[in-house]
Length: 111
Image (cartoon, rainbow, N blue to C red; front, top):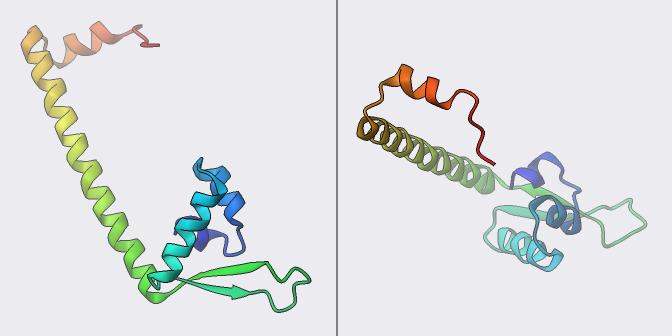
């Protein structure tokens, strides 16, 4: 939905390339958004290519995008909190305090 909102005349082929999926999958996803009423599909009236479309998020789509963004942020905050706890537990298990842990990681690069 973010891609459609930023660039209403984006093609499913461009969406597929950006997201890293097949064109068919991108088309299927866009059609599902249209079917759910989150996106409105409009033809370019002045376009010579009648297959050119303009994607417009509906008010319902804008609300749904906001809800999904909030859920995503909540999930990422939980993951971040869990990671911090795990790091703290591992440092405690190794008997390291914050300064010692930072020093032990200086110059270390995982590849």
